[in-house]
Image (tube, rainbow, N blue to C red; front, side, top):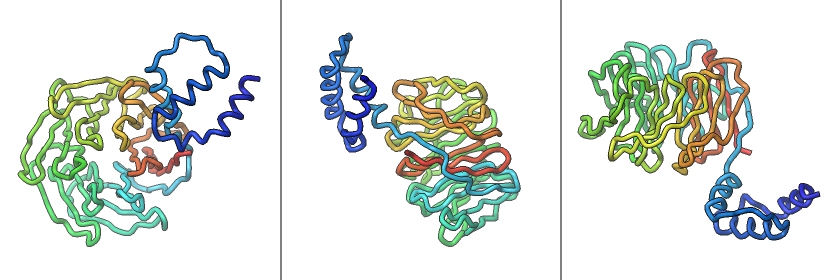
Amino acid sequence: MVNEELSITEQRLDIRKLKKTKEISIIMKYWIRLYSVKIGWIDEFNAIIARYILRKHYRFLKILQRHHSYVRNVKLSPDSSKIVLCSDETVKILSIASEKEIGILKRHSDIVNDAQFSPDGKTILSVSHDQTIRMWDVHSGREVVILEQFNNITYAQFSPNGQQIVSISNNGPIKIWDVTKREMICELNENTRHERKAKFSSNGRLVVSCSRTEEIFLWNVISGEKSKTLKGHFDAVNDVQFFSDNQTLVSCSMDNTIRLWDAELAVEIQKLQGYSDNIIMMDVSSNDNTIVSVSENGTIQLWKSL
């Protein structure tokens, strides 16, 4: 009976339009009084529950493409109209609407490990076994910057303002670089030799990294210290990323799952399943409504928020 009444109440309340925790708090207090729930309630519970009421949840949308060669990376453009991926020694740009290739970038002389759009969507950043970081103009496909002598670099990402780059190399520490000066400005402390990816939060204050040891770490950019550890995957974590709220994380793993996390509470909030193979990489659209992921067999999938 209580469940039926609660269902009716939820239908009358358009929770998605409630943008302030205070509004949700009023509703929860009314609900508790209405059903005479006698528990030891504290104000902090309201804020915690409010997060999960407003949280996005995702469903599988479609398979975008099955790529014939090994795909090492897949990233969305800021406007969610394009995808950049790297395969072998090339970087490719796909249109989501037409599901066709619209650009190919060829200058690397060895395997490209990663590629992604700049925050303004005008530049693509790529890193390769050829020991270079290259920047490309998206519109013309022309190489505009080349940074050399980056030994064994496997990943690099722009900061939200495009002025810094965070990078990881094989068996090396996480480093942060100044794009203009082309020099290292910070090296994250502690042992980071098992890290696979490292990415900025949207406010640039935190870096999240994922590990071959099934763990996810949060780092303070200013102090360089590790602040939190997230555990839940039961195999190596291949990729991880912040949502735009600086609070939600998404990760993918060799355990064939994508998981969403509350970074502040360090708890898992949703698990996406549907792959039969190792998920090697994923990305989130700038509005947080779409997740794109790619598995080891080259299958690219889209997940949409409910």
